[in-house]
Image (cartoon, rainbow, N blue to C red; front, side, top):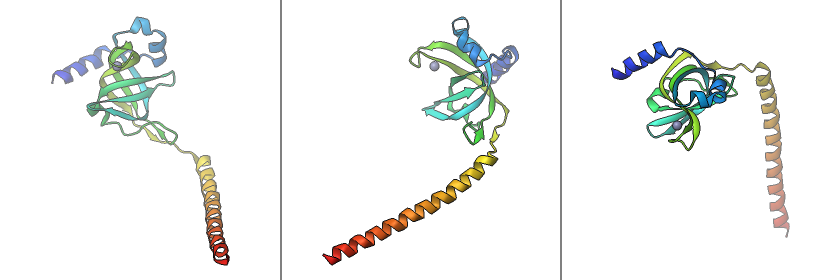
Amino acid sequence: MVQTLLSLWLSITMLTVTPINDLINKSIQLDKSTVTIEAEVIGEVLERGDYAWINVNDKSNAIGVYLPIEMTKELTKFGDYNNIGDTVRVTGYFTRNCVEHGGELDIHATSITIIKKGAVTEHTLSKWKLSIALIFGTIAGLGYFTELLFLKKKKKKDEEAE
Ligand SMILES: [Zn+2]
């Protein structure tokens, strides 16, 4: 209840979204303050016991967000070559020199909301290329395998001949 009220209060009062690049450029001024960012979740959840790290990127820059692991459960898509990650609004405590994490510049999230679900990236051309590569790869693989078999047989024959 307290947490719900707190996050409600935060979502009302902290709606100024700061570009991640501003956090980095103005890290001295914004150090140890509550900030809100909106960014795409990229990579994967890195579990650290009851907590976790996620990486977010808002195209201006990227930052590590530290948060309770339950808060990552809602996340469905993580940005990589094949996926566009969920876009989240993260509110949390920003430090340029986190004592808990070896002097990292990070955000300890107090709330995270998915504002846009991620999606699978369409690589029409790449898919086509991939199929071709796969076909050639299979042919090459088969060729290699056949050659191996042949060599093995030949070796056996040679051995038998001795
Ligand atoms: Zn930290």
